[in-house]
Image (cartoon, rainbow, N blue to C red; front, side):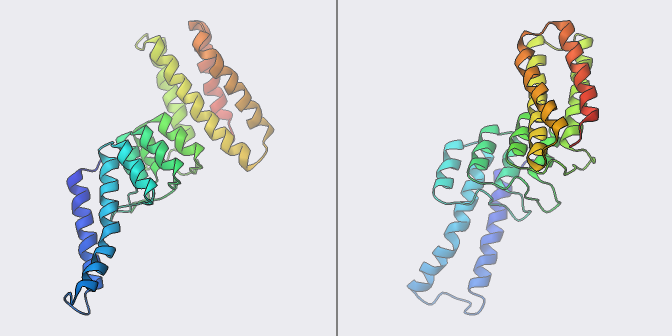
Amino acid sequence: MSHSDSELKTDFKIKIRKQLQIDFKASKRIHNQHDIRMLKKKIHPLCQEMRFLQAVNTHNTNEVKRFLDQGVSPNTSDSQLRSALHLAVTKEYADIVQLLLLYGADPNKRDLIYNTPLHLAACIHNLPIITMLINAKANVNLKDTCGRKPLDLAKSKLEILLRSFRNGSIEMIRLKRELEQIVDLLLSILNRSVEREQNDNNIFEAAQLHLMKLSISTETNSNLDNAMTKLLGDIENMKI
């Protein structure tokens, strides 16, 4: 799923070559300085896009922001229709994901094989990035290649967390951090549902989740077990 610099360079060399073929198919050659200026004008945006995606790929946040400020589209994509957001999600660069979304990147953009950034985030089980995408209006009902929605992923993650807690294979600090991530994801999903329709049950569930998140850091072991067990049952009954 990851992309190397050489792959990006090769991809944009092909795009530039195609642009040249289109521009000079009729004439077959450059006639004068005006043609050279026009050629540079055509190629410059493609070069900028290549450098922009390279900056995303190498986690150069400052460069990514500079290109965005210069007007490079946050939805810039390669020949496989993989956008900058697809790339940042795959690399798990949460800060760049957040930056791209801030500048208007489309969280529902599909690549050539119909994956959205949310599908890729689900594949790598990155709950914070999934939450970011959902908060940016990603479609929570889109399924990944295994037929799962974000809600299914939250349930699966919580089941693993509960088992790890009961057999003592996870540190308490990590458990509480990952439980907060699950609660954040569920809140994002519920909030999207409430935006679509004022469902009293989902509003109540969201309020309960807010209270749970506030109490996670101070909960005792027995209370945490009870809270996670209850949350699993609540997920089963959620109507999203």
